[in-house]
Image (cartoon, rainbow, N blue to C red; front, side, top):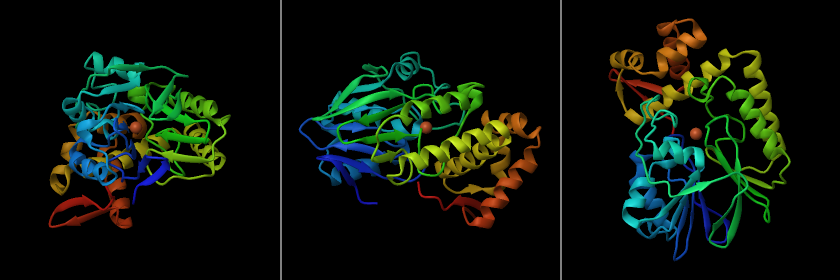
Length: 307
Ligand SMILES: [Fe+2]
């Protein structure tokens, strides 16, 4: 995907699934919004350089939330440039206290590095990205420190993992708490009154039909309240693909035993599927193999989903 100049000198980069979409302001004092996944940082740097942004000169990083696919380059950029890093005060608390559980890193065995969160963001704060001013809206549910950035003048919304065009980010009740679906619904209510003409999501392409996406997201969450197993099913599917992307090709005979050693897999199956570990695994994997999302070659599994 070629970069999109969403505002003068502010670029949007659409990535795959392992790497969240991110943004960069081309300037003498460059600003980044999110920095994708750690393992792909070299590619991210090349992408930034392609629009004339030198990561060694970054002045500030603004963080939508501390999940690994959004903060992968934070520490590296900060080490080199000494930049400020702004994050919602809850995420700053995770960084300040060395809490790798709350941003999911330990729960899902993801690669990520702590960074020095020098600026605490609050709901309602105005943040400057060069001459573009955004309003911070705290929107928990998917993540306790989740924020979206709204540009009122141009009616643009950087929605991160709160709102995608048709799919929905993982809901993780075990880390975010039993009210996470309700919290996410409240967050959607909070942004529903904004006037939005274009949405730049954390995953997937930008879109314009804000109300349709809101409607789809609400329906999905209400469906979760009626049938909580749908949350478990979605989590298993997304994290199994995510794990394959993180690990590359995995010997098939190792994959299930390795999943059983994680925090998230047995717990999710216990919580939603009555401890039917092998059946749940086989069910998700056979669906993926049938649809070509996962391929089996020479005894190894790999995914065809773009990182
Ligand atoms: Fe996320």
